[in-house]
Image (tube, rainbow, N blue to C red; front, side, top):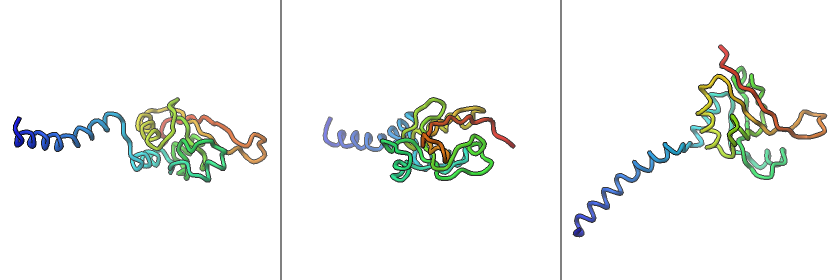
Length: 143
């Protein structure tokens, strides 16, 4: 292959690669933080990465999971008993470590009638344990 043909071949690879990469990311379930946040709001919660304050409050060893910053009233999350300042660690037995994990899991379950959400949260005042793991049953949408 001469230099001109090689240059054209390389240019073709460079032009095709971004499309291929985007398709591979879509197939592998890549999820942006913005998409994950939107799915959380559709469910009825405002979420984000676990920050230092929540990590310290809940005595978490690692800042993993997804923090709940707000629960929207009369939403599926509200009816399920999800609490503000809890950390979502599991959805339908799938471990949640990052916002991307959360988004992928929510995308799978949002059209299902029933699923579970496992949270790690501060215990109610007067509880000697001081923290707790709760599993929330999410039922069908209410009209």
